[in-house]
Image 1: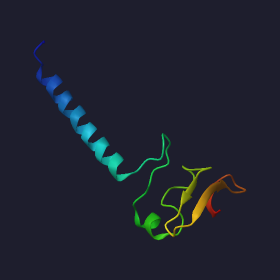
Image 2 (image 1 turned 180 degrees about the horizontal axis):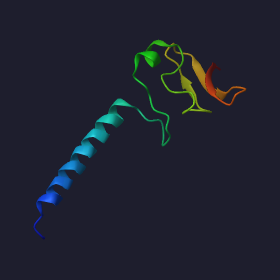
Image 3 (image 1 turned 180 degrees about the vertical axis):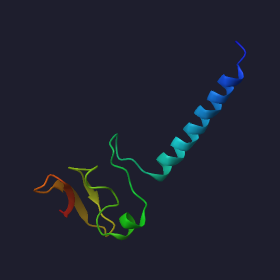
Length: 86
């Protein structure tokens, strides 16, 4: 095995640090499938009745809202997705 130069050791540490941050981010922001639909934890999303997800990122999906009711993300007349009660 070739000896590592100081530059390679620094890069290895950065990769490990990035992996650790990525793991933490994924644990905090729960992804749904392989999409951009990510659970949000800010006050705006925690206090509203609809699901704590951006409707535009989850367009066409059905989820349970913070109030326990089922919501579906549908595009409105302008093409922007909004949560509506099923």
